[in-house]
Amino acid sequence: MIQANNVTLRVGKKALFEDVNIKFTEGNCYGLIGANGAGKSTFLKILSGVLETTNGDVSLTPGQRLSVLEQDHFKYDSYPVMDTVIMGNERLYQIMKEKDAIYAKEDFTDEDGIRASELEAEFAEMDGWDAETNAAMLLNGLGIETDLHYSQMADLNGNEKVKVLLAKALFGNPDILLLDEPTNHLDLDAIAWLEEFLINFDNTVIVVSHDRYFLNKVCTHIADIDYGKIQLFAGNYDFWYESSQLIIKQRKEANKKKEEQIKELQEFISRFSANASKSKQATSRKRALEKIELDDIRPSSRKYPYIDFRPEREIGNEVLTVEGISKTINGEKVLDNISFIVGHDDKIALVGGNELAKTTLFQILMGEMEPDEGNYKWGVTTSQAYFPKDSTSEFDNDYSITDWLMGYSPVKDVTYVRGFLGRMLFAGEDGVKKVKVLSGGEKVRCLLSKMMISGANCLLFDEPTNHLDMESITALNEGMKKFKGVEIFSCHDHQVVQTTANRIMEILPDGTLIDKITTYDEYLESDEMARKRTVYTSTASEDEDD
Image (cartoon, rainbow, N blue to C red; front, top):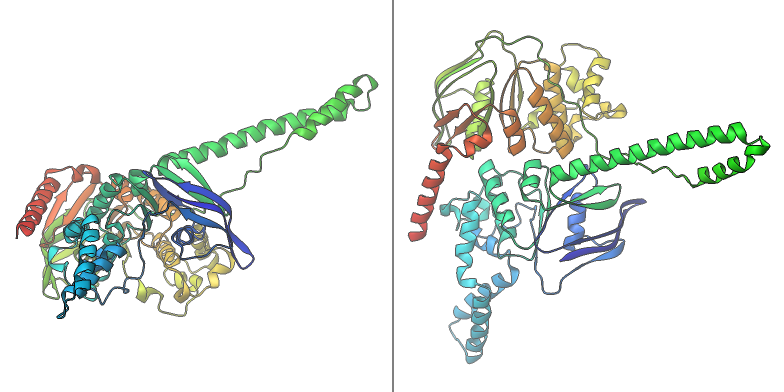
């Protein structure tokens, strides 16, 4: 168990948290939610002891081990992958290193023998003999291939490092697990594996995530941060949303009834206060009026952008034809003879763990890269808008937000452009901010504004939910569902994929394509996925036998 006792944290004159009291108990998974800037990550740092409180304290059950998902992807570059994961249990790793140092001595003394015996006993008690096997299972589950398990962390790419750090946090059955955005940079297969891991995890989990499907799947409780307070709700994210909306509705209805009662009392008092025969009743009603208090319904700090993609022209029957496209990058064939035809009602999700292949296909379709073989053709009635995974070049200039978007607007009018920015929560003086200083989430909202203002009837998205808060993801999800045109997108948000796509394409590790007219959930239960799992399981078994 871990709990916050009268926790207050002030940053300057502002109180980020005020007298927070909350208890997180064993066997439950708590989703910590709130608007951007509400202090979700900060509260996790308070719980982990990284940040000191202004007032109050954090306590946990004596003897329990707390594990945290670290965010510094370069911290362990000088260590092997396997060592990094096992460091998740600091005491176990210390024992292993001390044992190795003792056994490496040339002048092994009696004292060394006694110390080694003590360490071996503690090592066995901590299940040390299975440490590497358990670490390998975590790494394999998250998609880190066996041949990387003893590589240096410095040799891994960014996404692989994220997975190793997650495996480190999960390692050794910690009593309390703090996870800040654990699904970031994970493919959908790895997210599904993590969901099952947390569902079966018996101890305490506190998780921050913008993935609504993930929170619905794993959470038993929701801890909602709003205006420096944390309110606990039993149930998953959807249950919290329905409950919170119902509470607000009930309080508004109660206030409405009170307002009607106040009006009636005021009318009676005004009418009969000067009437001698009614004066006692008027006085009685004055006392009743004084006792009525309206509930203070403070609006939520959450803000939802308005995302609405409207195509300027209707799309024809010929949309996109792709024939035999192949592409090799750095000696790896990421696309191998890919062919498909896109219809005018298609909303296609590119799924699977082959991130480079998906991005390469987007870049080819948008003319940013040439295929080695094959060709593609967009229909004459189509127009395209593209959300790239890496948008660095878009914002490497001195333009203000307004001037930047004006460059893409068909209507060269400041009021018109500011209307699109306003929908994306850029109000007032925000329009003069330089695009080069924007946060990751602000840049994403700029790119979505650019796509909206384009009026395109074919939208291509390469991971658009990265850097967005939950409110913006919800708005984007609604915009993608309502869009009356063609969409081709990759996204790690399960709910976006499930509620938007009517066709699933998976580019396999060998560069070939599986193409199905189906929803994402149906695809996950399909024969193709069952076959892939069988192949993966048998391969993993062969590795273990070796």
